[in-house]
Length: 254
Image (cartoon, rainbow, N blue to C red):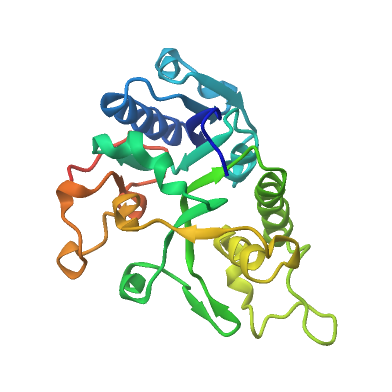
């Protein structure tokens, strides 16, 4: 697809707790440090806004939904969007080149290969294996089917978390043998279901970044076990290393 004249920008979502907002502002500032011309959208609750939000070029107001990130992803003002979890930090000038990674794909994620399972939960289950990580997502937001995919990601996750939707077994009951009930917590499951099982999206080109650890390097990873140098990482992901309670934010020195 030709993307020459399409707008491109970065999107970060912060809802529910003020500390997520603080983390998001930190992330946006780190992007601008390496790429001052970056167009950045902040999706957040109105009650959090203060003078620090001026780092964002665009602001969209959301609710305190548990997965406002998915709602926000569908509301992006850009034609091509790079979504980034708020608890990440930019550490490399190549952030400006991320849009080149899209190629002819519709959506690009980072992966969940077996050699990283030691830091992830519930990667493998009876009915399948998670292959995509939703912490970052580069996507063609101007393509109607891609937008519907993101909207369905939010819609079905909301239903599954509220126990109103789940894959059915041959008897028409919620299939909790192949898809154990604890997986309802994860929007990761919804992403897996839509990309692996939903016929509507079978023609979407969904892929994983080349050298994907550059774009989502979890702080829990032992980098001596992986083919990447710390100096090559574009985005570090604090995740479990950040206390997500309502205390003052403490950033980790990577």
